Length: 129
Image 1 (spheres, one colour):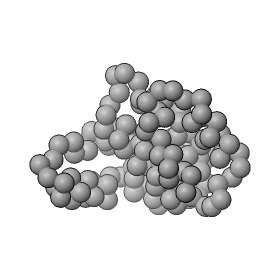
Image 2 (cartoon, rainbow, N blue to C red):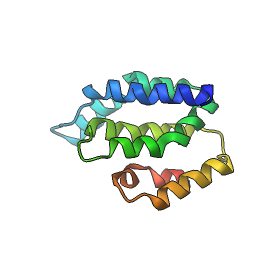
Image 3 (cartoon, one colour):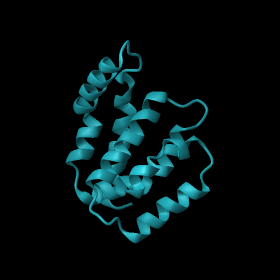
Image 4 (tube, one colour):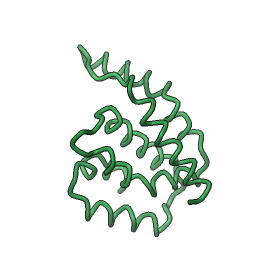
């Protein structure tokens, strides 16, 4: 495992540790937007991912399906299941373009083979853009 992949794993572990206080219920759409925006801006794992090097962001993407599979099981933590796709979106947004061909192939292959909830959680539309 490369140093970038180790750092990406650390960010994933931080997502698991810090998603417990993620807001889940709201009275209005405005409240949802306001509270989620605030929570995302203050979450240390998402901050770490935003501030990480391009190599760490690519390492995060490279391991993303493995983590989605781990979290999308029947006894899943819904807060982590909701935070992980947001982190993947951040990595997709910030990663250098075009993505390396081997990473693109890996993600497409994983998506094609996946039939669990991990497939539902993966932000495929943003991946394609």
